[in-house]
Length: 163
Ligand SMILES: [Zn+2]
Image (cartoon, rainbow, N blue to C red; front, side, top):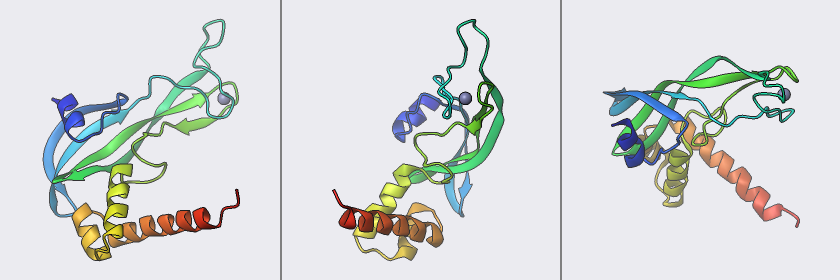
């Protein structure tokens, strides 16, 4: 059931474990609310590159609680919202770094997926009003403006880059 949901909505990340799906609302529109956790199988320390265990089998990287965030994953007909997506946190004993696992589908510290950001850019290109884009994608107008600004920065850097 949950794997079917992942397939239908193009969120087939093997590390995203969906535990339940229910009907609910998001920004006053019907939405599927999923409870999920994100626990990457292959991990290395982002700072020192340590593996989870050293040569003697001792654990170098240990689980260190989790961080819970709300993420709008997709928006095709019905929004799929992961309420309190539980992202695994880790600690490296080698260099004492702490970090939160990042789901590929969502840019770090963003609360909408790359799928929706791409959709917003597509609609901006169609010259649809920002208000309507916000409505179509179930996001706030300020979120649409944020995506637009990031796009502007990218385009300006692209035009003026020196190869
Ligand atoms: Zn480390």
